[in-house]
Image 1 (cartoon, rainbow, N blue to C red):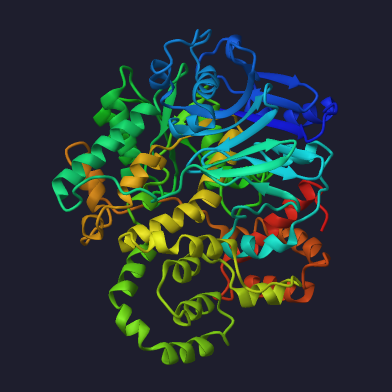
Image 2: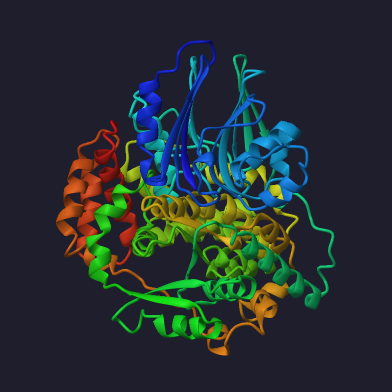
Length: 621
């Protein structure tokens, strides 16, 4: 796991070395073990390394292939690099790492090599002979990659703040993207919070030459249905288990210790169980415990640790620790987000033990359709005929609900007013934080009410519409919340403390298979049906049949007490910015302080985080 940065000039000219070095320095937290640089007349690369596979200096980057033609910088891991090496018997490998494997594969197969690679990665590769630059991102969008394109060339990096550190891109807020952030708590593809900086689409590759930029999408979610009899429930459960085992096994490849987050919930327990089953050494597991018994899961974590004989560490933390770490977590945000504090604090605690790599059970809820709105969507589809024939009645009720001050009522109104129960119409309302009406009242942004999420779902509507209903929601999750909030927060919060987190539940083969599993296998009366059926003999019954639990930070209380001054200061500063209707935002804050039940803490926190992020990164509006 690393950080990459680079600049490509369309016309020959010396790339500013100072800019590349500043960009690379801004990524030092992502790779504290080594740095490296490459320069020529067209391109400059910078790299920060967190050494995981082949710890020797021979694998430092930028890395040049044996012929001297290709130069590459990579962020991430190629889980199947040993398999790829076996297909390249004629290449004289000098290292035992996955970086050389990538460049050798590119030398053999060209950009099509990405179809053979399995892993989480973002890379940039320079072809000296053809004077071509390729930048690529993994299928699921686990590893970030941003770029700025102008008349002179392209600037790219693992983080937005690295591009800003070049001094070549104005620190100007992308106000047209703000409604997406306020609606869904993050900036979705291709948007970013900075005007002129874009996210590279997951599963895509850019080819850049002096003639311009060409984009290829090499993988899309739910594009190919596996050849499998999905009506055979027992065979389906067995296949899920096989894919889970393979996903975990591939993520154990490392030349440093691999640990695991162990909450005591079913997802992390399965990951640990499979680790123990396939590893030749005891897994090292970590659990965060709380003094508040209603939140504490350490009993279950210890039960699992004992079952699988792990080297278990319980890290005792109080809510006050999380509160004290809040600003550190906010400083770690490369892109504003309403979430991520939990990941930052847990990652920091694990990193302090000396562990560099940890497996996580994140993604299980999305994969196995566990959120309540999955079942709500299923029920809507089952009553589609009633929905289709009651449009006028629904619209009348929706108009009444929109007159209230409740964001929840506004979201319900949007669902009721939808002409169809398509996933593109319904899913955004499940995930919406602030309603369009409220955004228009609080901001001065000229906005038509649309969103990038709706646009992307509409593009994929025909393909997603062929999936089982629960899988339609999962597919929407992967394009929405999962990619742009969950994975982004996991990456930025863990890499802020130099910890590599690997997520087996986001294995693209596993995800693609699960998207075609029938609803009846996933949700009889228990949303754990397909997962439990696949791992039944493995886990203790106390884990399999316990209710889902998690620590919920008391933000509603903190923001009115311990964090009141902090929040109020950010709100006051934000109210002075031209894109905010200061009077309406202050009223919104006042209603929240007066315990208006229609305003959730997240609706306020989004504004607080935005202002803090702008101040921290010196972003102008």
